[in-house]
Amino acid sequence: MRINATHAHHVGNMIAISLSKSGIVTLTRGIEPVAEVASEIILADIKKEHALEEKVKTILSENEDEIEFQRVDEKQLFWMIKKKLSKEFDVTLSHEDRYSNIAHAILDELYEEDFLNYDVSENRVKNVIYDAIDNYLKGFIAIENAVLDKIQGYKRELVPGSEEYEIVFGKLYAEELQKRGMA
Image 1 (tube, rainbow, N blue to C red):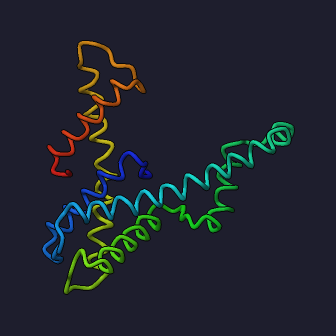
Image 2 (cartoon, rainbow, N blue to C red):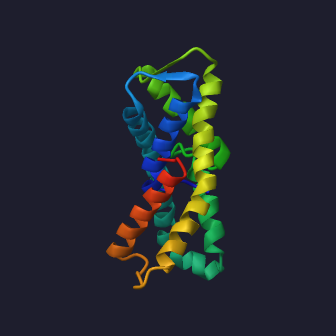
């Protein structure tokens, strides 16, 4: 599963909380600045992938007639082009490697900007960040299902994608994160 832009803030918060609770680091400026740095790095990574996907869509669009004539599977072609261009856009496609790279980038930024101090191995701190990302993603599906169940229990029907639905979903999602100690 991949992180999308709407979740970057939540993942950033979870990283900051995990670092704070780890007992192996000292946050020199508190939780909020750490969460902000983590969120910004995650969003930058998401934007790189989005730019890559837009380029792939452009290529597919420019070759639409040929693709249709050759009866090529567009999903498979999309993936093949994305894979070929991923290095040019500095996007790691393997989720495990990608989140490891993000964890390392977050740790580097936090250390360089003096947001945290530690006396253990760098890898151990990076693993706390990586585990926070991984645990968030694992918990996301359960949280989303709980929120959807609550929305279905509403007396009036909310239309997915509507402004009201998004507001209610966001509020319930934040409550579930809080309830599970992830915010």
